Length: 138
Image (cartoon, rainbow, N blue to C red; front, side, top):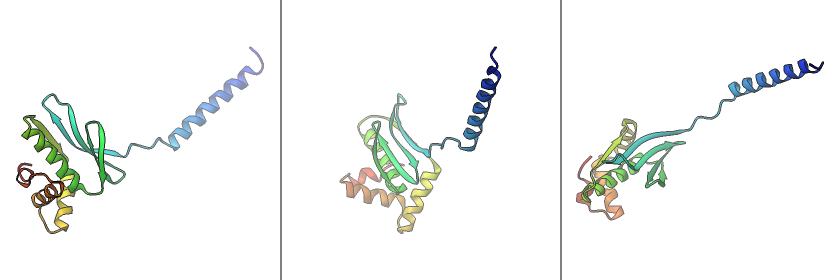
């Protein structure tokens, strides 16, 4: 052993301790993505989903981001229309969404003085979807 071995060992220990302390003091930022809805087929394949990221609702379909908005009502109505479209095309699906998304959507449309079903029909009309189909199911 050389005279400097102990010094190098001590220096390595100090560096490792410093790195641990810095990691504890500055933790890696947590992902700010909260899942709120998913649309799956019978094989449990994900067809669409809604997450909340940095205060915005993000709608994903077919593995790609379909859109972002601050409107919970809009993304919930859109994923409901997607579910209905699949059902009408003989693809049984299961739509699950969080209470937080539902509550935010219903509160948003209540501020406009309408109920959620009316909002869905209005959005369907905007998008050119048959209003009868859009008002159907939850």
